[in-house]
Image 1 (tube, one colour):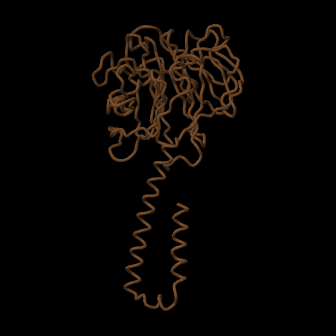
Image 2: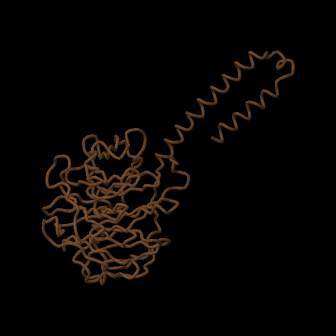
Length: 376
């Protein structure tokens, strides 16, 4: 844009340099015609320049890996890193190595230094995490339950559920992840394998000890699931996005009624090649920037795409998907297996934390490059 401004200035300077007798020959109608042509030239060139600039910025990448983060896991005997959550100025990471003293490591946001650990003997194996004003929710995938922690002390505030297939009292078969709606209801994706293949909605009024209803069941039809592995709440239109992993799709539900309102197949929405779509392991949303993040643990990828944009978006519609803004090859992605994520919407750089459940134990942070974000 600076280049166009300089051209405009040079053009006007050249006009001023014309001899007086030439300028005196320019009649008002001629001046109007020249002015209109000049204005048209400026508009067209500006639009074309903005288009090229947008393409260049997107090609250059909106998000980049923060190579210095985190410092706190270096030398720690952890493995099977399953989930991550941002709690204030801290980052809570869950891992499942039984030889490590605790399930959870707490890092500072600034550099990822290790602050403390907690969680020993509080569950069988953590899988999905979600921070909230009520506490840190964590699914116990092998214990058929959900724990709510005081993230400051590591105390278990409440434990919900047992293994099984009942709706009430709540029972789970490999519970995978949690989404919290504004009243505090907890949507539990049940699960990662297991037999239930459903979403169980826990009532906050009863401190999540009872379920309002169940959604779905095993299958490939709309509203059914084959490993509902990850779940997230998008606030603008009260959408619940579910990563239906083995059906290779995202299913979206109304966060108030629970009704299915749309499906995005990963092919073509998150393409690997001309015929194959991503395997959706994790899904998270940045409500502030209207972005959706999808992790693919099978192919070692992280996708970033726009949501709630243009026409067709409402509480009962998700519109059509567009091409991803960015597709990132995660370092050691095929072996570290990108799993779950957390988005720090309060960060000026829109930080996204990604953990890998494979080898090596992986905790990554991606940040927006300054000046690279194009939407207001």
